[in-house]
Length: 542
Image 1 (cartoon, rainbow, N blue to C red):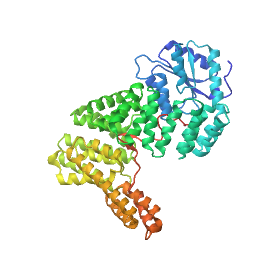
Image 2: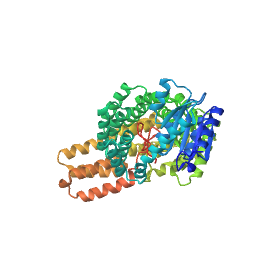
Image 3: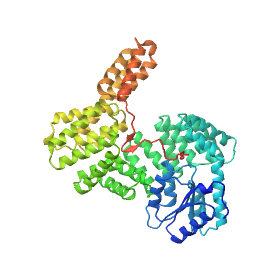
Image 4: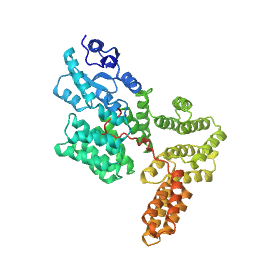
């Protein structure tokens, strides 16, 4: 036995192939190279669950699985996008189809290499040795990434790219991602532009779009991403990133169309199916939402990528359709998640909503009403974010009319709306959560208009030389409504007109206190998480 390298005895490998003979041959080849631990899997679904839970050093994965919901490249792309595959893992795709198109597809994926079956032991050893050599060469960069200092690691990656040292193209991707994470989008733009100057690269085009998003330049991001989609209509990442941009702009219908395209291009992608289902839910496309979320459940029942929010939305759809058996199964699953993570206020809230609806189904009206009031009482808490408002609104619009006083319900809905209508996107999210209830939708839109009027009048007053009065109004209304837009605007005007204010320091201190108390980060819009990972980004888990 000739060892592949000095560290191979400690390595863990997995072979994923639907053909038992191919699995056995590749497993024997790996063992002959010195690997002691080699697992075999026939189904791509099982591979996803294994790789989500346990890191492996080497993965050999077939490209095509007959009858499976996803391919090998799709499995790899999803694991990398969601930061579930360490950068140090050597992931090679394997195919029996030696056509130019098939090998080119593998080369364009994020795999470390491609092997054509049948593959000799010598070829396998050569490819693995090269991949592991590259991993070792980039070890200092991985170590810098693990340190947590994104700017330092970005500078190191950019230096490798600029000097055109080995693996400089990969270093350019890493530098772009890290500069964005370090809050320095212009440095990321510079890297992307340098790459594009040498030739077209889809990831660099998307990188420019992500730079615009990071700077809040939504219109520019939309133009950039629409141009990317026009250049390459088959780039699922471009469609998804455009969908996310359109969500931020509050154009949910256009976003759903782009997410449909992204999902159709990658039918095995569990997250995109969930995102499509969530957007359909918030647009009232109930049949589509139910179909996509049920399919996501079937694909990823045990997967870490199956989001609790997807279970909640599907449970609401089952409740509204009077599919009580399906609702009960989902409610039980959410209850189990809440019990397993007792410290999660988010899961407790979701569980509370579904228990409330179960009580309403059983005509335990007083129990349902008290549960709805308990949800509403949390709206004063600092961590009561947009998702919490959606859960609370979903409860109140589903209470049977005879159960709750109309004035009480209107007061709850108006309070939620005044706090959370900070943009068109958050407003449309609340509208979508209102379950088609005309009165609730009207209250949400009225609150949005009211917040807009307050902000506009304050800005007008500051421009006319009445900055102190404008800031005081924003602080008073911000405290009354708990609206982040008004609170943050008071901070902006306090800094801009500090020399004209009676006590700028006191205004800023009060605004800071209000921000800490009421301005919870928006982690989701239209049921889609605003995670650090962005389509088109490179996985940085080292």
